[in-house]
Length: 377
Image (cartoon, rainbow, N blue to C red; front, side, top):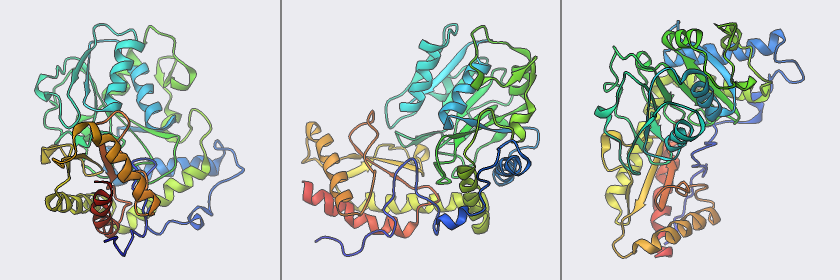
């Protein structure tokens, strides 16, 4: 039978993600609109985003934090173009975004013999094979595969290369060991449920040292320049952004951060994500047609949770159409929006479980998933 109750918020997209519980436009009434972002009020808002995130995430005082253009993609590519080239590079790729960084390293930047350590969807590359005398690029959490690194223990403290970490679907939901990460990037539209186009860039002292001692041999677009005259442009990390930010989006990010602080900060956000994953783990344990794409619980994402079809009566050549039909049926019923697998991933579903999603909405979604499969099958 068709379930009687729908999720109150059926937004389970993996980006942009659901707004924080209780969100409304009233929360943006103090946005610094119609003013220059370089004026005192606008710059103060940008600095507040930086300061609140530093405090909530426990980022060390001597790590620089900047707001940069182009979302997480812009922040990570800025780091690649600015920092790489002085030594070899290892790129870890086990999902779409990591493979994108591998393409940049092997086909776009003129790097000397980059090495790609690759694994299929649902798996991790051999972390023990990474050479930390080289610079290392990786995603902490594979947004399109639902696979994350288990921790930072595989990264040595005495590495001579830099670690560049795309953490956009991990930060605020998973504990990041900052001393292991020389460059970290994310955006506001993932775990915070913020708006798009703005990226966060965090640099360790080792990364700053590289920037001030290494000049890449290729032309550097203005939007990527982090140094001037061989010195870090400190203003970028104090609220003086490289290009014009949306102060409406800035206010929305502050609204999300204030909400996070009100419920207990990072620990509460991580707990909400863990609780959300537990709901779907209980569902998988009781259903016979879907399973986790990430089979190993120790590397299973608790934000972008990815599923494959396991029903033995659904042949492989029908799974893509069946998954799309489930997605479309749930959207038509207003029970779940945007839960299809990423276009490059194996056929299946992807449900965002970050902290802005209510556990009660995931509980309400479970019977709808089984109903939809029954209809499609």
